[in-house]
Length: 145
Image 1 (cartoon, rainbow, N blue to C red):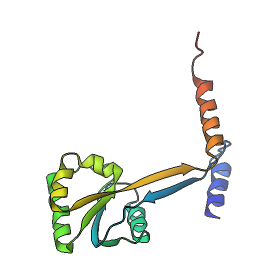
Image 2: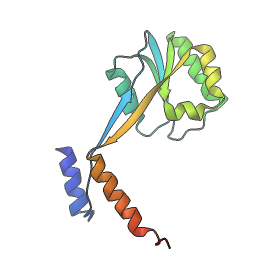
Image 3: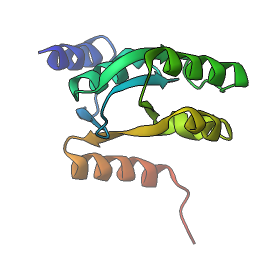
Image 4: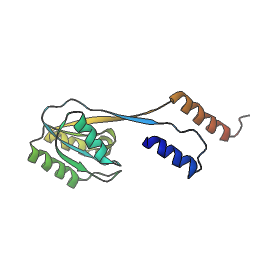
């Protein structure tokens, strides 16, 4: 019902005349025993933490950083302290944050295992969505000689 309301708003107030497709987000949560410290630097981190809980993880601490956060030594010390206080078996974060950790990933792994929960997005009516997008792109490209 919320999706229909949003679609109606986009069409009536926003003036959008094109197609609207639904997105389905899923999370691939690794199996873990014992308490974990979850952290991320993404938009809407509460959704990430809720997904971990619903997958059955025992979350000892949740630490949210700003979206697109650049990790520092201070952040790593904060995470390690949280893991020690919680007697955590592992850290769990997103793929994006694992990449953003860079060299600090190894420093976290010295404390306890670093696990990654993969986030995936699927587009409803994928074939129709791709055909529409490709059609829009090809109509804007200069003609090839």
